[in-house]
Length: 213
Image (cartoon, rainbow, N blue to C red; front, side, top):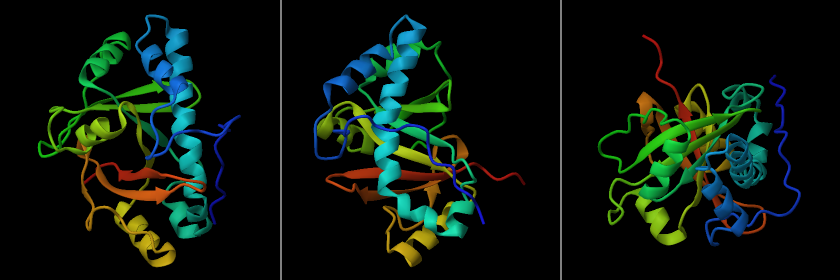
């Protein structure tokens, strides 16, 4: 049986983040500060962005961890990344301010560019933008509808297929895609749009890294 360690991040006030509201001013400021020349400001901004995404996601999927087999696929302390969608010009500024991290390899049929940022205390962000602002890709649609903000929360697991099967059978949660699909950097992914406890929804991505042959 896996003992699940809950995250250390607790909101001191209710988060306004959901899929039916505009980006809050603190989140807008944090996105701006993520491209600051001051590393302390960038780190503080990353914490703010992470706390706007992670705790609501944790509350939304809390019941999932009651299934021991499901929890075991994620380990005692799950690796969680908050996905931040921004406009191409913001994407460029943030990347430049953070030392031009490597762009991940996104499948050509998916309209996205992205890079990852890591900060102390296991704060991880996935910064995404669209290749075509006028296109029909998921990031482009998100930006057009909601503006810059937290788009998804990503959980690393060892077997997306099995995790999806458990969610369907035990919790009646349906994935967005009928089959696990290719993700960035040779990962395998699926997504779940999950209601938040009060209002709105959060997009959860389950992903696994490429298995060694």
